[in-house]
Image (cartoon, rainbow, N blue to C red; front, side):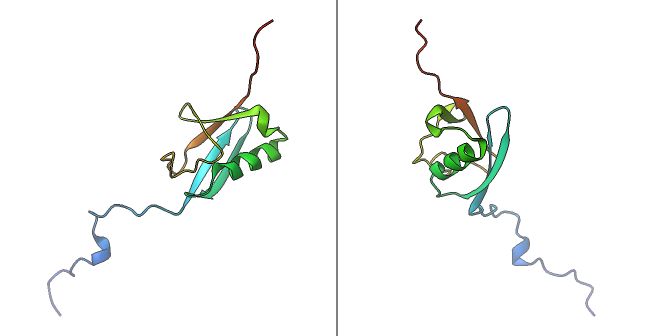
Length: 100
């Protein structure tokens, strides 16, 4: 029996950055409802936008999706927007006009 402590294992190295998961959990909210989606980093957000509108009974043409105050395009994906796990997309009613 040896009195030496066990040598540290290579997996216990804390200098490595944690590996990014392939999937993200994204919250979509319209201030009345919150829906959580788990999507891949490379999935176009159009899928998420369509699913949210379908669940809430909204017309996608009447909705505006924002991430950090910037409008989200249907062709964007979490990778291009530099989204992290747990980020939120805001949904607002599209307003047209304003003249009376």
